[in-house]
Length: 298
Ligand code: PSU
Ligand code: MN
Image (cartoon, rainbow, N blue to C red):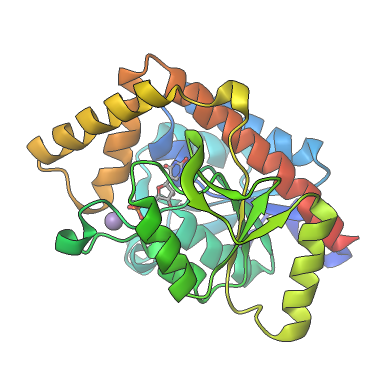
């Protein structure tokens, strides 16, 4: 792993650091705006008082913290989507890879970074009872000691089944100023959250208790709902989702291509409204992640 000097210095001094994933840059947001948004996400972490550490694989090497040339390459080049199982083969052939939540969490923990911010977690896909399509984000978080700040899981998933799997896998879920589990574009998935927190200090208290009590091996999710003014209209959301699932089925989209396909479908069919929601929520998560990292470090 190549850890950026700014990140190394911050970690050595006990200053707050927030890990960021790169699949959202390469596959989750439309080009060419994705590069500018990636920089804004890093800016939101800095504004919240922490050092950003975007994680990606560049020419076969894992980078924790990207310089501008590397960020540019991930946003505009041909980086492939890499989950944990893809890391070794991709690195061995010297390729460029954009890390998912699972792969990012793995390297964040390996680098000693606890707080990680993103848009939405992967989860159990609709129809998983037949396809077995469940994101490796969940199983990886069951054994990786990070706190993922996200806006719940994408509404394209089976949210209820995902909540059940989070429970089974021992992954704690904290609702940030909410009692409802968020669904990415929507603030309320219709499912409850068991534990509510109302400040970064309260989240830091949970992290310290976890460290004391030996449950730190498991990941935690801090579920931060999209702001009301950025939320997607529910009727539009339901209509586009139904059409997107039909289109994915008709096009034979499977496996790791499903999530990027549906996000792109939303971006096109909502006339940019889904991108606006996506950007608003990820910036909010980056900012909150920084505040939590600062409270935990302090
Ligand atoms: N959230 C976003 N945009 C994304 C993703 C999440 O706002 O592009 C990505 C994340 O990298 C997540 C991945 O880990 O989608 C899940 O993909 P899959 O369902 O194939 O595991
Ligand atoms: Mn999958």
